[in-house]
Image 1: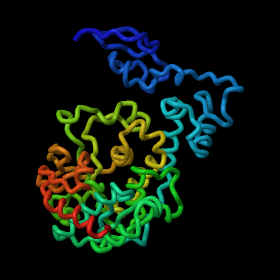
Image 2: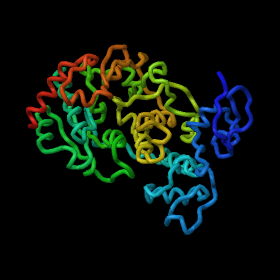
Image 3: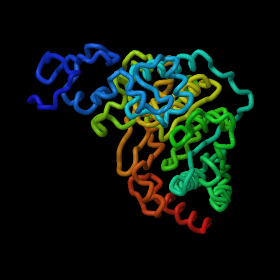
Image 4: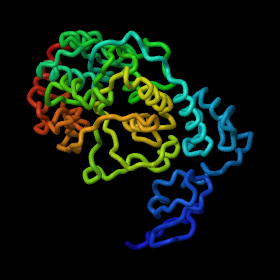
Length: 383
């Protein structure tokens, strides 16, 4: 491997080996970290030197109440509470931002909410707002019903404009209830897309909840998962993301673990197109995950969407969870997920939303014919 010539970076220090460098940036959370030149070029959070400069800007050019890296942690937390839409680009990589969010996470962990008393039973929830996601969710629910699933199902959405009365009526014919997250108080700090998943899991009426992404097409009725001994023992099942050979990305960096206050580990990433949680057993963990999602303007720069907010929450609280030993498979357009015995149970068609909506048959899906049937039926019922 030859050394790649790059623009000078004042943070890269002396070379200890071919394309191995000791970072000289005092602002990195891990001082003296050994990095590669490609890290400096693409992944270093301080490659934008403006984000490293702790000196405040000219007051004449500084917006009112704008944060800056030299602020105190307490003042920065107050600024976060007022909203981050006016923050300068790259603020998430400031040391004060990292310290503030670690401190807020510590406080969230130290003040767990009381376990709810008005939750009961088992159910399935699906984030289903907007035409694309509603159509996919309808297909998911139809396939579940055709496979014999009798569990209650709820479609969660953000505001009345996301599901029309005609769509709600079509869902009702599948015995699906539609719930508007915006009608629930108190509202979280941020609630847009991925944040809805943990919010819905907390506020749905079920004690035990199976969350499915809208574009998830079950291969078999998943009801039996609720009776799996490992789930009963540990209170949660999470599914693995695609293995490195298929998707060569380390989802969580060493920096992410450090900011979250967790010793670094290199275990399997989560893929949250599906997860199963007992809320009575995992109420604290679920709320810690919700805290991370409420602060998605920061944490989503360190993780990819919501998926590893659950991993960070469970690891931070040192709580066990079950995960299938069988690796996730890939057959375009779906991630194939298995149960704890190795049988395919879900096909998360994450790259096939439009094909599902158009009623195209996707041979990779174990229930491809039922998905086509559902798309045609939706056109009839909503037209």
